[in-house]
Length: 177
View 1 (cartoon, helix red, strand yellow):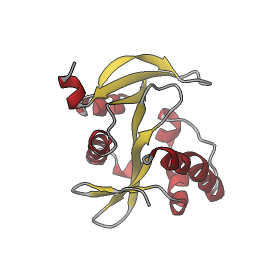
View 2 (cartoon, one colour):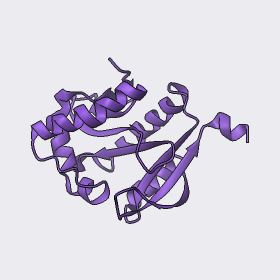
View 3 (spheres, one colour):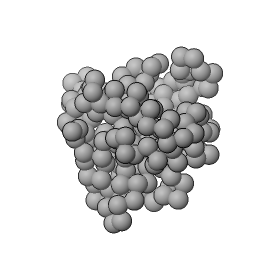
View 4 (spheres, helix red, strand yellow):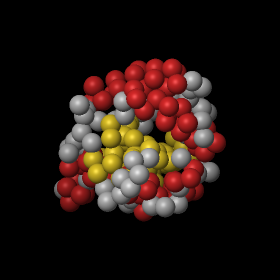
């Protein structure tokens, strides 16, 4: 129904209800809870509801959103990356997360690079934002490798955690400045 993307090693498939068991696992990993936040999703049914009310609604509204990262070699779901219309972040936010056993293998960079390319070339966005907690140095390094530039520290509405806000402007917009 919505676009999917590919990289050398990954399929980036738009999230659907059938992905609920995977998201239940991902949302309850220690790093997700520490760096992204506890979504209070504790059952497959709650994961299905989260997908239906949060993820699928954004796809319906904007045509893009959260993508499941599927490894081509064995068709295992290893993480998620996407473009998020997040309250408190100006513009569209690029995000990524992996199950712990798939970290430090270049998958997040590979997926986020493809999502960034789609944001500018397929969805015609002019600028992307990204956020990372102050203590999430791995995500900060990845954002810098993706050529995002630190802008300032922010706190999202109804939250207390200070975040680092990064931005990346499309090449066309950089050239027109």
